[in-house]
Image (cartoon, rainbow, N blue to C red; front, side):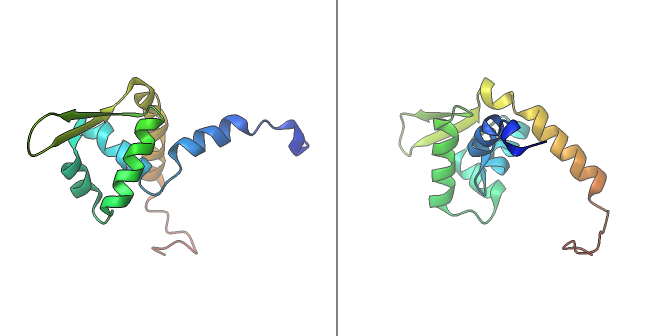
Length: 114
């Protein structure tokens, strides 16, 4: 089969939406917890910087995967949750989790834990 016969566009588009060091982690936590405040997300992610988290959240919101709800109060309160579009990706994330569960103890040569 020649490479020219393969339509890469759908795959490239899907990857471009989730490409980013923290995007899948953000989606995972929102999927599991429902709605999280910015500080809760930052705490759940661990070592993410404010700039990186802010950028990744803006991109996920721009791509229609998450909602951002800002409450008009002092101090500001911002919550994030999944959109229907974002939730439609969760079967894929579920399969990744299942694959990880199945293969986490493989200890293959060359793996980080081997």
